[in-house]
Length: 299
View 1 (cartoon, rainbow, N blue to C red):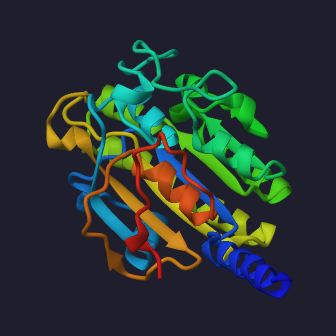
View 2 (view 1 turned 180 degrees about the horizontal axis):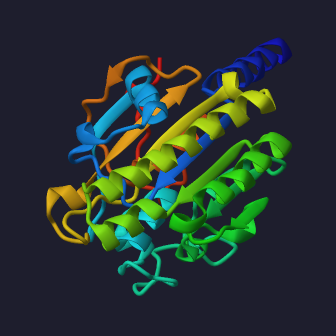
């Protein structure tokens, strides 16, 4: 009887170990580009680093924003794994939910990828940097190791990149989300798909190259998945409408265990990003999240 009980306990333990998710990589860098539209991207010039990631990894030009296609709403969905009706942020500049969040965590905010990491990996180093301070209301700053308030992007992008590179090389974060705002600012001031818009994207591309080099210098490049995406697109000098140019943004995966030279053909929505980050790190997804991992991107 005792031998039978011991066998059953051993079998249950081995089953639990087998079902435990294993990480795809131990580091994730999410490069968020405010206003980076999928439309007309083939005409962008001087973006060798972004093109290398897009062509060498797994990529989609049809990741769709939630509605409306505005900033705070979609940054919230990117980090919170749900749509507007659940997290409750409804305007481009929402600082608190206009509709009460359907649930909140111990910090009083809808569960974010940062709080999920903190709960399941308490010692993990995490960071977020941003040039638009509206993001600080959407990320659960109490759950993040390092929150970096940077200067207005279009004037100081290279200087801001210095801070990002220093953070990566010094802290080797498990998860870091550097968020750049200037593409959106250039779209609003000069227009989406103009020379000025693409010139600024080229400046961002050089920062992407520096981030890649920082990962190598930190010794974590080979154990990292890089994700690059936007919160929304745009057209003329605005966004937030149902125009598909406002709603579709590129989504790029590159790095450890990512499928090479693969075009993603499954439907992907903004809130799938948080779920995919959790999946890469081998974490359990909160039951309240509606996003699902983009498994097709990985070997």
